[in-house]
Length: 308
Image (cartoon, rainbow, N blue to C red; front, side, top):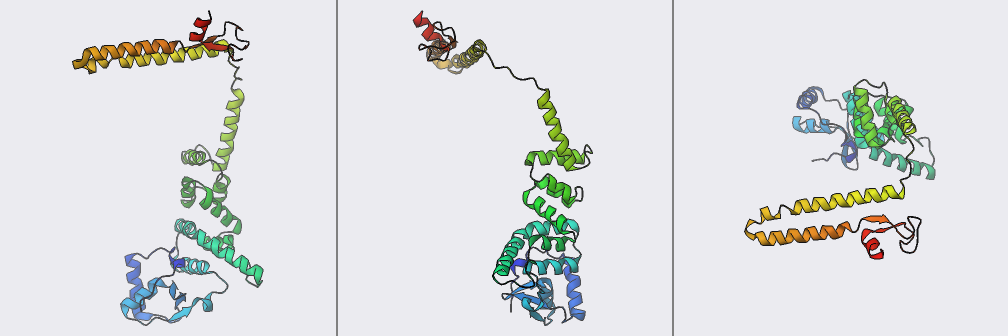
């Protein structure tokens, strides 16, 4: 009979070749029927590698249904608790497991809460997310809350620093809601030794920005004359650039020199016309606004010439 692995067990890491060889040797020499393969919905929930080793070593495995050994745990809780305890998985790998299986943990927690409301029992609340994460990591519920927040909200750089042990979960959680770019900057600053904690760096960064903004002089509103001058410079710059680019046409169209010169002349004429679009002070109201300038205080140089 060929069995499949239950999806709730997929988060557990695969054994290395050396680990599996050692397991096969152990199964062949003294397989214990007290360590059964746990089944759920016709699939292997716990003991996948033991099952494979039994098949390979031609040892008859013992099976047991999950309901018989659950002890109030959800499938994800059971798999993680058994796997982590049995294989002594390091902190970094445990965090990776949390990240991978968190959606399933949340789903099971919601299902248990709904079931508990409909039929309250002694196990109500055991499926809650933070209890599962706390048990997996061997930390307090508050630390588990911080880990979940970082896994779900923080930039990968922050989560990576937490997994490496460079940043405490509580510290990482404090900056998890900041913009991702700012989080990455804080991680780099901490790696360089510029700040002791991310939260300290976030506070100092906010203060620095506030000080810089306070030190900046208030921008005075540009006068109409200044706006006209700036617009005129922009149009003049644009026209010069177009004429400059058009000037290369005779070099490109060597065999059609007359055509190129004609095109260049048209471009220059067009730019002369474009210059007439430069805004100037309205001669009727001198900037105060009137019907001629539609209360804008300015008109085009072309209109000004026609008026005068």
